[in-house]
Image 1 (cartoon, helix red, strand yellow):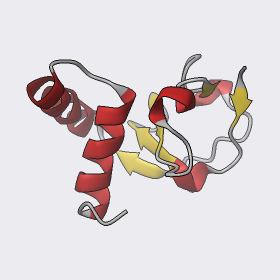
Image 2: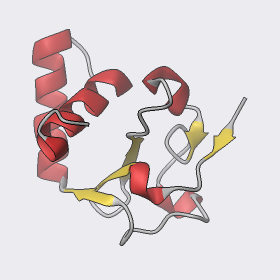
Image 3: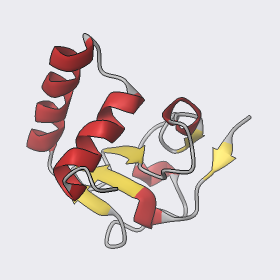
Length: 94
């Protein structure tokens, strides 16, 4: 099933929509990868995406995030990216 996200406040937006990750704590990360546009492209594919309303993270941060995931888990996963985002953006308080 493909879900359609309509709340950009849950969206970690790397490099102005180049790559999106949902940080909604109500959804398991492995299901979130089925959300448009996360599993199917970039922000340009999402009619609801609002760059100003999302959480912006630079591509340098994304590179750091990928390295962190690989060091901690041996791979870059949605769960790892969410964990990194929560620690980096919210200090682990979300």
